[in-house]
Picture 1 (cartoon, rainbow, N blue to C red):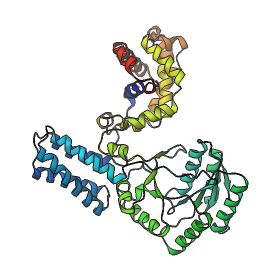
Picture 2 (tube, rainbow, N blue to C red; picture 1 turned 120 degrees about the vertical axis):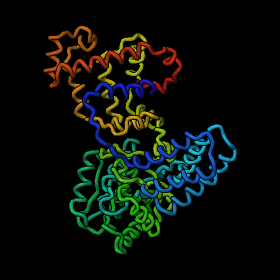
Picture 3 (cartoon, one colour; picture 1 turned 30 degrees about the vertical axis):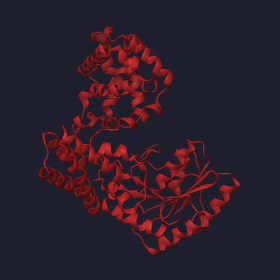
Length: 466
């Protein structure tokens, strides 16, 4: 992992000539920036008084309210932080500002649920997961994502199109099911209750492990919808009732969660569109308002863009502390261990080539958007705020490498003037672009050459996938 993390900013440098300095807004960006500014002022003070601590927490309160956090949740959160932080101040710690940040971090974890809660799947098949929510929240997409998640765990899954009202809902689920190669059960415009009953009967006959019900939604909560869902719940006896809450709807997502919980007793919440540009308060409020754990988060449009919700990791990211654990896990999911060991030997022998660099670029692309990976590295994401990587820029760097002969990729020193013209023309770039990329690669080689080899020897094997 050490090597992959070090390569992320270097790859960013290699495409540096093509960076677009446009504002890239993520779910918690605004909240993170305001909290960071407040804590920076606290850390700059040698000692803290109760008065300036209260002033700082007023700013925290405003930041939370502006991020759409429920006002009661905000009030209780700030009160708890103040009570614990005053104790830190009276102790007159060497670094009281850091201690206050620690208190906020702990309270934020508590607010988000303290421990991750996984989806329960019964050992006696078929287990039933009932997916519910309003129209447009992302229920159908989540149904397919859940199916893929459990298919990877060697579960036989059946997706059920139980929304006969929304135009093209059945067709959408069928297309997504085909995409992830999972069977979809549908009965056209039949009653949702009948669809779910028949789907469960078929699942028992075909020894299906997991049935996922994509239920109908409305543009708003009404008695007809809730009565229908309550009947489906009674008929299928689901192990999980998951509410899909659109994180971009802000405070309204909290109200929806409260209503669904009161009528259906939901077992968990899935936050969709966490990669959007909303203010993020829903994620901080839903757990406190409903008492229901956030179990999963949708982080993108791909079928694989579904992750467990970890309160401690989310709290660290909100406070700008990064999320190195998630980065390690992403790397371990995509890394070929044998190739990693080969690369480690090359680095020891100082034989890192453009071919190796190209392979690392492909590995990093599998791990997700580069900007998201940067945000997981403590301190690095913050220093690069406002910078977004143009995907075409990365493709251009790849094109330059692929336009070289194998000999040129292994030994860039042989690339003379005529070769540079050929490579630039073949990759659709210019000679100055190619020169810049080669200079930056040479700098990377020097970085690895000057690295203390003890660093590689001392790292655990499971932390060195690259």
